Image (tube, rainbow, N blue to C red; front, side, top):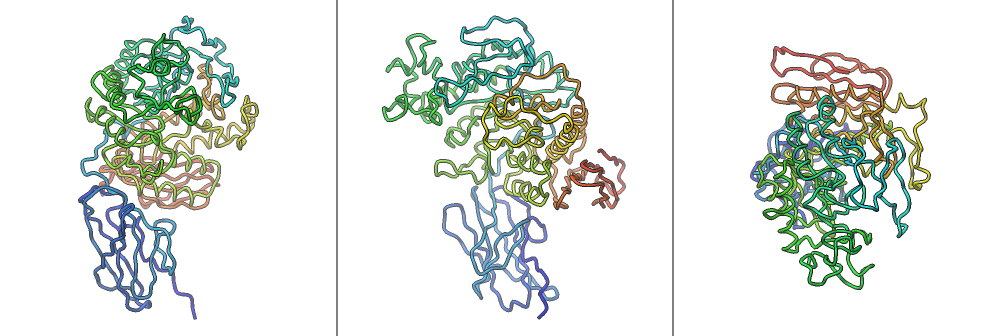
Length: 620
């Protein structure tokens, strides 16, 4: 008997089968269409829809006519409450069901399989427009630029590094579970302010600063005083001046909020005694005592972040702490009042949802244009932490998250991995994320927590090897040209996918480095490397000038072998992006034209949406 031709029963990413694409606001009607070959005989298909952690509901689908050899069925529903919903189809008559396979398509099977996901968010969920066509730039403050040289060190236990090209120290700490972070290169607010013209030329519209509050490590994630800038960076007034000057260059600034723990060496805990006789550790009557969980069962006698005694965890649901962070005159109010345009929340997985909602309210009290993003390493819609499904992107928490899934996809493609898996990873995020969140997701290649992009793409994998192995290990000189090409290919992807690209300081000049502290070296201002700077500046300009990159829809055209081809469609313009990790390529575009793509390169085509287009250009 001849093999039956492949039949598409359903495809969640195709408007022929489901509208609208992806996540929807509560109250919006969703239409599902199913096609079943007549050869299967009589069927009575049902949509089986399950709200997260609830019982499934079976909805009988309606017959919707025939085409030769195929029966059509349809069902419409408007979910009334936000949440995660999962669905598949049951034919009912012969115990077979249709479950999800790759690329959003359905497969007929007798055994249970994977459900499709439908994310439903609050209908009033809005995110700031100013960020959506812009470009972010992440700065690790101590390592960017020293604007005020020869500053006296504010604390005696800090080590000043005049050797700006020297490798960061990685001396082990007292517990031998990490390394000391006491070497400082002197980067400051004045240095950032002096380099604003450079950042403007690069196309930057938003600076994300790693922590700036007073703290006793160069990374400043062990906060000592939330209401005071670290004196090596400058004063609170210096920060306000930086924000005001940045605004003149069309640049906003967001800050890193570390609210799951403080430093043990802090005004609030004060284990080390730097701040006098007070503090929760030394004084049972301290006003900060209720912030912490003291118990002899913990190492050190108190709960700490992942067991690091220098990072005592806080009780975010303590009213005193919540008011300190979110109340009038509190942390959020103070720094937004000084000119910051938002916050990035560190380790959001460890912040309760209701605490994040309070932070959102405090941020948005300064204006709906203030941004709230957070560190989440996985798909933020399905993330579970501490046996709880997180509600980050439902509309009452975060505006967006750091887009680690896109980062992983970009690195994989640039390293030469098959584009089909890359395309699937990209489209799953596009399908699951609410559009308001997707449009301002932070698309990065490197951060202070990852290897530098060029190292991740072209360096020898560390595979868990220690810092001595990572130290001074560089990509061989004869491979740098190819490494930079691959980095540009990855950034071309991140600049043109939904979301907002973010360049980690120094990536644009090809700085290398494995994990911290090697990814946190001082910016090499003597570098003459421009092979990334100029294209990144051009890509940023393209984003500002083409509305397809300002919330435009995303359509995957092809993802196979060495080629990733997708289309962005805006109100006025459309852009077609072809990334080629293989040999010379000739492609027919959706515009009806043929174009070539250089080996290992990319082509971006932009065209007006009007029938008689007035603009058409090609960018390599």
